[in-house]
Structures are given as C-alpha cells and as structure tokens.
Image (tube, rainbow, N blue to C red):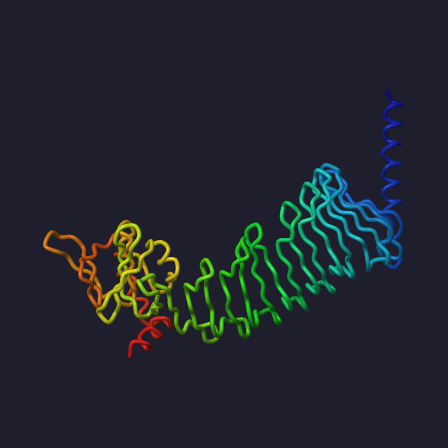
Length: 349
C-alpha cells in the first residue's frame, strides 16, 4: 500500500515538472518552447510553440470536448498565419490569412456540408476586393466589390432562380443606374441614384409595360404616377388620389381630389401594390377601401351609432372604418407636420 502511494506521488510530481518544463518563461518574461494552456477543469485550451514570445509553427485551439476548434499555422512568427476554423463535428468553417491579427487577403467560408458559401477579400482587417456569396446549390447569389470597408464598384445580386438586380456603388452609396430583371429576363425596375439616394427617374414594369413612374430629388419622393387600366391607359399621380374602392373582383373606382373619379379595370390588389404604403392606408381592410391619409379629417357616428370616416373630398358612399382604420384616424394628429405631409400640401397649393 505504501509503495503504491509513493508511485502515485512520484507520477504526480513528474506530471507537474513536465507541465512546468513545457510552459517556460525566460528572464525577459517571454514564452519559450512548447506550451499547453488548460482551463480550470484541465481541458486543453491551446497548444503550440513559442520562440522569444512569438508563436511559431502550428498552434491548435480546442473545444471543451477536445475536438479542434482553430488551427493557426505561422509563416512569420507571431505575425502571419494561415487560419482554419472548425465546428465541434470537425467540419471546416473558414480558411484565410491573419496578418498581425487582421484578416488579410482571400477568406473562404463553408457550411457544415463542406460547401463554399462565401469568399471575401480583406486588406489588414477591412473589406477590400471582391466578396462573393453562393447559394446552397453552389450558384452565385451575390457579387460585390469593396474598397477600404465601403462597397465600391459593380454590384450584382440574384433574385429568384434567374432574376437579378445590379448597380454601381461609389464609396458605399449607389450611384447611377440600377436595374432589376425577373426570372424571364424582363425588366421590372429601373432607377437612378446620386450619392446613395434615389435621384431622378425611378420606374417599375409589369410584362414589359410601365406601371409606376416616379421622380425623386436626393432621396425625397417628388411624384409617383401609377398606371390605371381605363379604356385609354393613363397615369395618375398618387398625390391626386383621395380614396379607392373595389367594384367587384376586376374593377377599382379611383376617387380623385378634384371630385372626379375613374374606373381601372384590374384587381384591387394589383393596383394597390403600385401605390405604396407611405401615402395610403386601409380604412376598412375587409372591404379593401384605401384612403389617402392626408384626406382623412376624422370620424363621426351615423344614426345607428356606427363609426363613419370623414374625408375631404367626401366620396359618394359612406366608409365604415374598421379598428385599424380608427387607429389611423387617431394617429393623424401626430403626422401632420411630417416631411411627406408638407410635400403633399405643397403640391395641392
């Protein structure tokens, strides 16, 4: 029994001496030789070799269960290393180069199936050069160029299976022409930017036909004209519309602020999608009645005690707002001084 205790004590002493021997610090306080760092439970955190305090060769970092988390292989001691990151199942997640602890050069990122999902270029820690994102099928999903941490240059992004949107960035902001095409190669959006803001013409298309024609000034909407399918196709400014009400499934009555009305031969959903939700709101969602918020004057009660909406101008039918419609009426008092409201008022003068 006494012999066994002595053997165990000797083994513990040798282990302790070995740990001290491998985790050496010289007189200048620099780490030297092979090091193994462990946590309070004795699990290995990392191991590697130091020369004069600088990492050399391969440094390996571990998960708590002992599987490899990171492997850094140094080509310049303490400065430049090839980095590999893994998940707990051993799947490679990322590879790239660190230069003085900054990402530098081309980095690649993978999913747990080993498929490449992203390539990104860096210059001493900042995004610089092409960045490419891939779909789960391996197709290109997005291509962007970066310069000094700003998007700069041509940008392309897949929309759906074969559709895409493309434009040009200058120092982080879109500049010039942007276009979007659907899966059939048809143009669905074309617009212009200046200093990162919409500026000039901005148009939307359906089946090769122009449906929305906008004009912007440094990010502020100046006008939005939408197509109405009247006997003679025509465009009407959204700032001239007071409210809209469906008439069956394939007609919409458009009430204008000048007191006239037009009938567009299409579904309410198709027309409403073009209007935008910054000017209009549902007064009654079930009845699909849409009103220009700046035309809402308030609400009152009818003879039966039901809430009715007051508009200016008032259409030739009574609007019974739902709960959301009443909330919209109550919120109007807080919105009358917004920039969009001022724009609408200016246009009506």
